[in-house]
Image (cartoon, rainbow, N blue to C red; front, side, top):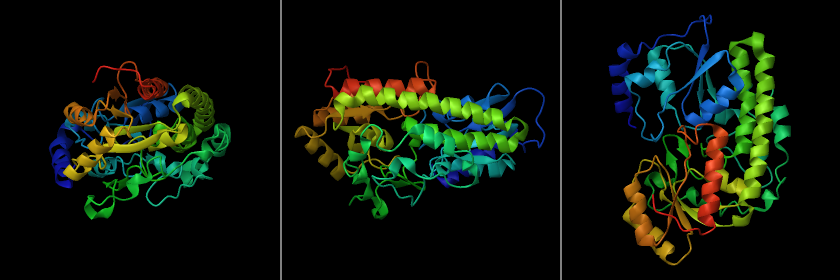
Length: 364
């Protein structure tokens, strides 16, 4: 989304949206929190409790990479006392919108709270135990310990170069930085913004979310922290469940619609070998497509996983030319059957198991 279009959308929408500064005192009834995407909203909801209404800005089926706010989207910010963004450059447009609205709602950057963002190092020995960063991370230690050590499932032996580090460079990429787009880097562990696709990282994010609520509503701080610990324990169990489910396909290679699966692949020993869109929002070059098709014909790419937010025609063309079968996965969810975070992650785990096991499927 270009800055000009952002300014146009904001300018046309402010009056209709009624986007006004949040009150320093809570209004009668549930308080309002806003999250940019559905999986983050569900994590926020698990910590918030019944005293809060949590709204999601981006509609299901819409790619955050091409999202442009409309009046109905901006109205969701009305009365917000806390705003939650995925961070790492993924949804920086929210800060622009809030500035234009003159909103005083504090913004919690979930990626920053778990140490993910531009320039963050990620190593085989410390990747999953990155230290929480900044004041938002207070109270995080309990959740880090709950998530267990890095190699709890033997994951430390995974080849990180094979799990998406191809994104470090590409000769056809503008400016020579493959994956760099709107301030974040796709496919680079520690910098890629799709942290929520690892339940372990999602569990770790809950401590910072609890502290964000505690800062706004200190009277109920311990309730937020208790809910965060409870939810984190559930996500640790979910992580173990998915790890066991995907054990039969560890080491399998796949092609993604775009590089959203670096943390998922790293966590569960899969290899995101290539993607149709190395940089979201930029069409792949003919050279990139030719290389993708050639490798697929040689049998080196496995299956192509497409997404509801990705144009289906492009995926079908690549699949047909490269001889790849298609399987649908979903990084965003927010629809029936994958409206909650656990539902979304179980849906994706089942899809990866089915696809990488070689089961025949109808093409989406």
